[in-house]
Length: 247
Image (cartoon, rainbow, N blue to C red; front, side, top):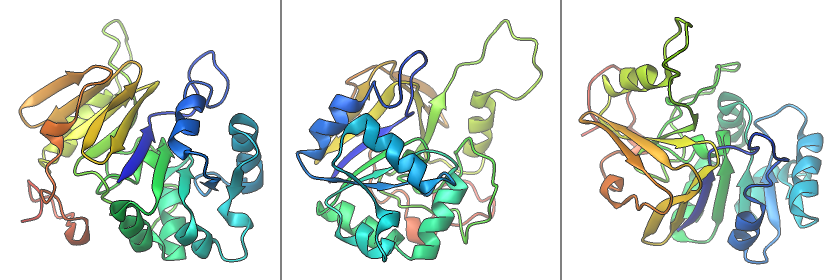
């Protein structure tokens, strides 16, 4: 299984995908990149923006008369960011979640995602930052990793006078009803998976939230401690407030 899961598409002060352009090219290994633009409304414009950033070997799956077939036959897939609920809803409606899951797990398909595209690699999208602008058939996602993911993570500003909940507080609320760890990726960071090699890439690292507290992971830190296959079965997800993963 090969995956590249980016926290974000644009770093502050940089152009779109500049921070990850070389890594994505290495990840593609010369294969054309099939791009999934469904997290945003302007599919053509989004695809063109990715093509301008990465080069001409980018093809939007929506341009195929049968986008589900384009996804099922892709060799390297890049799933763009935007709204996670809209993205997941589109994939449910196309009926491609199971084929995606199977092909990535078998190694037939290299999967790259950014932001929303990274969110859906987790068991569910319950730790996305996005507003539910649409109502997908469910919150269960691809379950390609056995932990939740929270992209764009930011630490609370101790000098802020804002009264809103912090990101850490919201993730703690998730852990009140589930003991599945959450890997919170700082901007510029990503998760790299190549077979049994699973680590943090990019820069700035990650913060893992779990019921015992938090653990900071630097760049190149491995994820072996949090890789517990079988701890969460995406096909049997329940949302009834019962603590812990499904037995």
